[in-house]
Image (cartoon, rainbow, N blue to C red; front, side, top):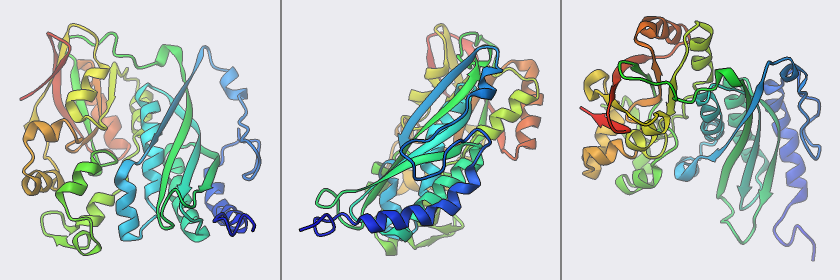
Length: 341
């Protein structure tokens, strides 16, 4: 009896690392001091020492049951982007810049080419967010997971000057809410998605005119990363007062998280076009509108609150960063919460 007979292939693990190195190289930053394959990742803090009052930020998350779609479709090159996005967007939401990322992949059996493909998506997410992929872990779990199954999650660290932290503390009535378009469902609510649609290859390969692509392509579209968009607003001289990453819990749970006591966020539902996938989901699943807005991003992946005087400058900065953005509401005095009208 040996480890391979027990279900863990050490040689496959070595091959996975070799195959993923080419993708990881694309994410390197000057601060990275170690190579992939060591026991830990080292990241120099020399530049951070030059900051006035640096604050470290961290985020950890996964892709939820969206990985099930990747398995059914046998398409594994974008799910890693989702893992990175869910972590770095939260860091950017606080005003920070991601520094580095670590991934964790659990699998029933280590297929080196598949693992390397997953990591290629992680690396792409890191490139999009300027974060270095400095390490990770691939854990083979025979007997605990089916051989073809896997899960991917991650952890990110970022930094921000304390004076630049986005806390929402000084949001006031009259401020304006600007929403940035999502790329689709992102990485939340897939347990409900899988109840609405048949999770078969045939169903996911079905083309819908209103979507302009297959159902699977639409649902698997990777979560948009907003790091560079928020940086563009900051560099334009605009002070972002509040920021909300619209993840699980949709509008109703996430918008209040950026608000201080004594104000209400008023969002106008007709201020932008809700993407077709959400309309299709509500129709096929007979899902009430409130439930949709309490589960999904409904086409807005990130919201920021700015002063009325900064609206035009903010929209210009987002456009320059390649983002589609809309004025979707404002702030009024009232009980902390959100009103959709």
